[in-house]
Image (cartoon, rainbow, N blue to C red; front, side, top):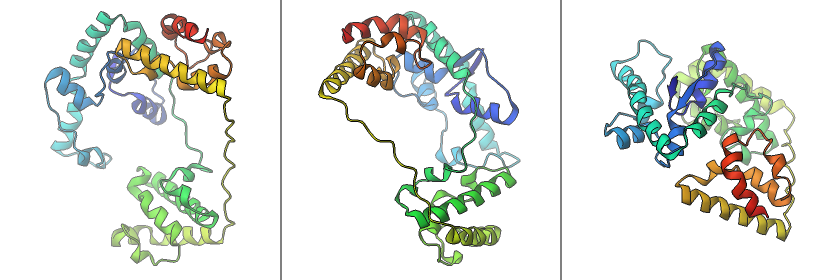
Length: 294
């Protein structure tokens, strides 16, 4: 049994860096959700279930963990992240057994085990930079060029991109490409020395490139009044059921499925074959859902 808290990122990282895949997982975050706990951070769980306080300072969370040697403070921080997982698992497992939800969590964890790392599409990833949605076509061309430079530099240094240059610098330069690099907020003398030449070339490439036209947005088809009423009724059903079970309603049935059912209420059997629907949901939740659709 592998006990991990909020394992999604760990699973993707292990797959990306060494092709290692997790089996027989117990995710303490998932387990906590299925017991009705709402404060799901590791520190909160350790505090509330074990009465122990651990240090989860933002400073250490955002530190450069690729540097060596790690400080004694960092080592203690890392150890605390795993030291209490077995104790948490024991308490959570007992609660799940009492609630009859052990199999539910096992199925959710098995689904999480199948997650794999997917590399970002560098052709469009720059559009996800915070602030990119406010840029015009010329600024987007500059941003794309800067983004690709940062990505290449991050790969060369084996560091996360935000440790190379933060998004705020990319957006500032995309918006103000003529500004002298010495005047760019946050870049500083060290950044200027390390990246000045590369940034200048990236800015030149972006300024001389054609403006970028955003991909057309998907047209939203407005639901009919009957479909809107049905969806409202389905949401109320899910909220009521979640309240009766002391569970986050989103765990019981995915909203996209409810939206499809609001348009086609006779397709529940099709929804049950979807990868987004677990066996426990089909067994435990679907009969109530069917009654709501009838």
